[in-house]
Image (cartoon, rainbow, N blue to C red; front, side, top):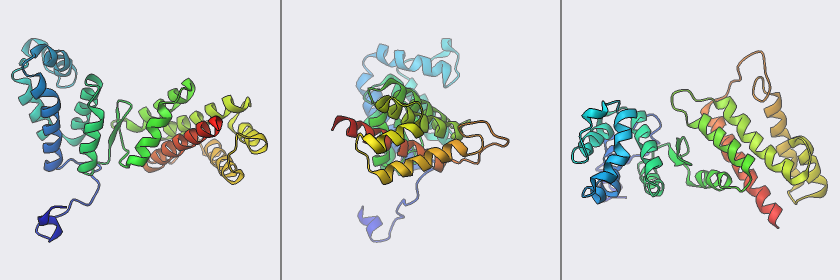
Length: 261
């Protein structure tokens, strides 16, 4: 904490920035993009052009024949970060993350510093602000179980869509990831049957936890329209979808650890 904040001469940024990016956050994001991407490559226009011509056409919606070139694209990027709505800045972050593989850790550090409510996970900007939650999701998505990876990535896609988030299907995919892991481990056909098998024969997971997961599975199966069709749309919000993604990721990681013991 700076002197000015400690002694009350400046406001401490205490609230998580959910649907906003203040001037300090935008400055920090721009500085990172400049230092990490633009400055080191300014003498090599081909690197800049390869990354930014697609952005110019597909994100900035500019005519390709009017692309300003490597010398001036930095001014366009800076203006975008400084002036565009907060969600468009995240669009740019996603695009840059897909083109520069070393971008994820530093941009997540910046987002954490400015108390943004989002992090980059597996190439998507998702409403995850806690580093422990982020770690659980990243570990689970890195699983060697193909179906687990697929379902968690689908859950993340539904959660991270800032224009049309689908929280119900995000939860459905999160629970299905757990089911995929448990079914493979036990040879049973459903998560409920797999949990019963684990309770009897292992791998070791505490019986109380198994019972808790059976209730979660029952809730996800019974919730109107969540895992099965219902008469009305399920009442699901972002917080619940995020909780389920984190919880299901953590349980996948627990099962993976139990499997290896």
